[in-house]
Amino acid sequence: MRAFAYERPSHLDEGIALLEQHGPDARPLAGGTDLIIRLRDGSLQPRIVVDVKRIAELDAGIAEQEEGLRIGARTVMTDITQDPRIRRDYRALADGAAVVGSVQIRNRATLAGNICNASPAADTAPALLVYGARVVVAGPGGTRSIPIDEVFVRSGMTTLERGELVTSVELPRPRSPTGAVHVRRTRRRGHDLASVTLACAVSADGKTRIGYGSLGPRPLLVVDETGLLADPAAPDLAKLRLLETMFGEASPSPRSMRASPEYRLAMLRVLGLRAIGIAIGRLGELRRGEAPA
Ligand SMILES: Cc1cc2nc3c(=O)[nH]c(=O)nc-3n(C[C@H](O)[C@H](O)[C@H](O)COP(=O)(O)OP(=O)(O)OC[C@H]3O[C@@H](n4cnc5c(N)ncnc54)[C@H](O)[C@@H]3O)c2cc1C
Image 1 (cartoon, rainbow, N blue to C red):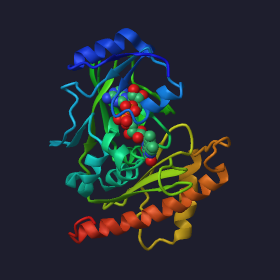
Image 2: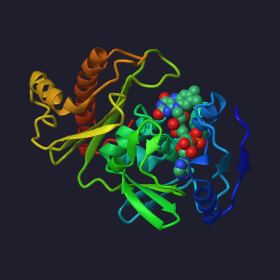
Image 3: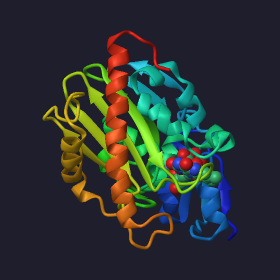
Image 4: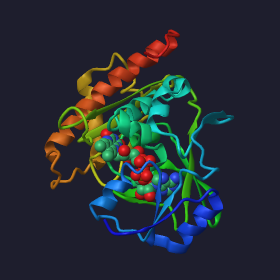
């Protein structure tokens, strides 16, 4: 590991100033579950690490606001999986956060860090896409809110600009009752990044939104507004045909050690169909007033 300076600012403007001053030579540190590994293996060699955990304005709270839910930048996966509002209204996000690493990792890993690491296999990304999340960032030019779909570029790269920090993630309130789930495929049980990670939301208005990752440089969102995927009576074969077309942009790497492109593409359709079935079932539970399991 190359030596670096360590700063622990107490206020947002100090953190932003440090990041702006040092540009690509600086890296924010939250839970460190991605960053420390990359510092150790030398794939990142910043001259300064800016620990954001003491920044007063970056809170770890989950709060209801008029348009939906706000998740503070320091919120960790454990708190996301346990929050009753997320479990009720954003179930795929609770599911996705619940499979990140292990208990120890989930106690440290932040949602903001998962987004900013920009891994195509990030397990919260599909659900954030499905729910149309917005990422609020603060920087030298002020504050802006970015649709999650415009944040990811490729592994390790986002559209955040020099000096910018994520301050919160906002989830809009679902317009109609929505059943949702996150599913994934890994090579083995236990710690492993996903060969396919996928979230699906079926809403009462007949719309199906599917976010998926690990099949190209960035996680992607596809939407079916025809009502076919949301129709419990529609044949699986018709759904699979539609899914095949919808997943046309998937481009898994042939160089990955995790799975071949053919396997990933096949599993994407299988998991897509499975997730639709679960989401339809959960929508039914919501309509019958049954609490989420
Ligand atoms: C053993 C192990 C298993 C794992 N398993 C999974 C898994 O199953 N699924 C999965 O998705 N991930 C997994 N991860 C990856 C990791 O835990 C997540 O990506 C985690 O959410 C990162 O959050 P963090 O707070 O630890 O971020 P950090 O490591 O502190 O930071 C990650 C990146 O985000 C930047 N950053 C952090 N906070 C901010 C901010 N507020 N504003 C701007 N930039 C910021 C950092 O500079 C860095 O580039 C695993 C990691 C380990 C070590």
